[in-house]
Image (cartoon, rainbow, N blue to C red; front, side, top):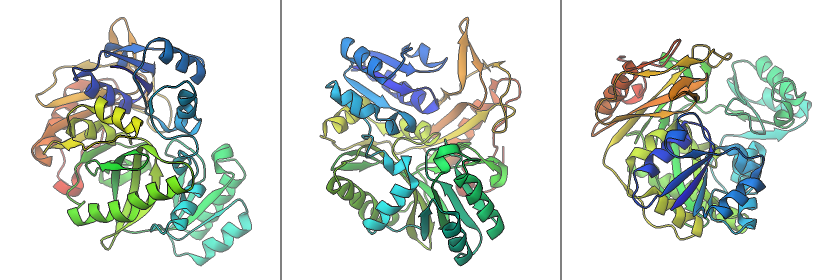
Length: 419
């Protein structure tokens, strides 16, 4: 199979690393890829999705996999289908589950799926009155895509109103904040639930737990994610079944009945309150860094799984009886500002661990950290502790100037003891 992967982050690298190990995968292409993906396949430079679709047609691409949310919201799947190409991901209409938080919340309400009490509005006075009716803390979200940064958890009503005002004025997130979602704060624990869907059927993947805050003990600013582990023992068999029955099934049924069947990865951001799952958000693709810990847990050919899903013929997915822990190594100034390039040196890669490269470039055969989230160190083992230890052993063997990483990934399961 010839496979094209759209995206340039650690998620896309992790997918490619899994595909590279499969005998039925001949060639990998990336649009645009990063400095490390060029060692797994060929990076492409194209102007737009039509040019990319032409490339896929001319080069006998059997399957295209879309990594990030932006191309999905921009309609890349619809364009590829116009060219008669197989592509794994939701249509532009279906991608609104992530692309518009207002659409998502209203969809949940229409389909009787549990979520926090909320208000969607582009009117500040309405937002202000609703804020007054809630207890603090209060969640204020920009409606559109903000690269994981459009959510404010306000500790006071004044802060909530100020955040809503800045979003609605366009000051905070531009057009993405011209409509806001104000909602009650749910106090529980978060889980990341993933299902591969073919429009009608789905297969659940291991439930992961992400670590959003920059610093240990869940302190500091929110980030795109500083680490993850899977599967999470917090996701009991009962809870998984409940999410499948009360969230995933009605979502697929509702999307199909409204005229935009969902094919792709459905990510359900859950808050579990008193053993009851509430939907915080939907994403319409693999999370990052969750993808980096999910890929090593899939037993069998990912290429065949995603190809069948794209055809609407999803079959069962076998999973390994193992745990994976991923630790993000970020640049010195992340997430505040850019950081100068720094050469990456890998002293050794311990057994049952590997690197998923993200914010990197390549110069004269060497890999450089470009800034942001640079790479993810992943450890795999029969226990969470052993997987965590392997991930951190790898971190200690990866050197670049100004690197930073959390020392407590998977603390929810292993306690506060740090490396």
